[in-house]
Length: 220
Image 1: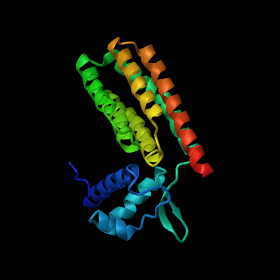
Image 2: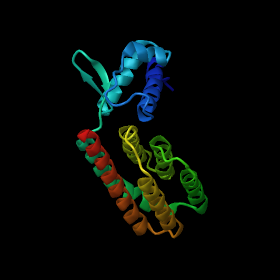
Image 3: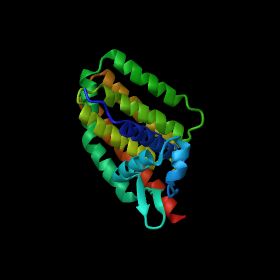
Image 4: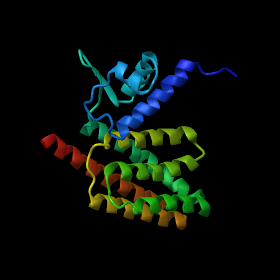
């Protein structure tokens, strides 16, 4: 079996760490990404950093501007719209399948993630987004179609990155918890139609909230 080149392994690791830094807000929208600084931060050479930035550029997280170099791309309406359109197609399929085939032990594990989410005392964006991400990814991870699951998870990861620096209020946090509970109820009753209807509403509400946050940001 052929081994993956060391440089590729290194760039994959840098990609994951850099994407996590963007998602958690360490590098905010519009922040410059100097290759030498990144190499120092991640204790690597500059080549893996360049490769990771090229991948992130292709995925829409990073952009290159003349005389400025790489920058974290600022979220815009069109990007969010496109991401949610993909999720509207994919998520009903996945949650419908989960409702039909998930065993009680799987639903119990999913509910435990929800318990963690509901236990958050201070609903800051990163904490809520991380647990919401974990909740949805659990459903994807159980599915047999790894390629489709990977596509779904990549879109969820994109939202996590895009929304990392936007505020989230208690009303939205409460709505997320309620909609997750409705999903779990549909899973318990093995009702794929109800699960699909709930996730469509969940996506719609999340999109409206994020659109509003972008509008408010752009008015400042």
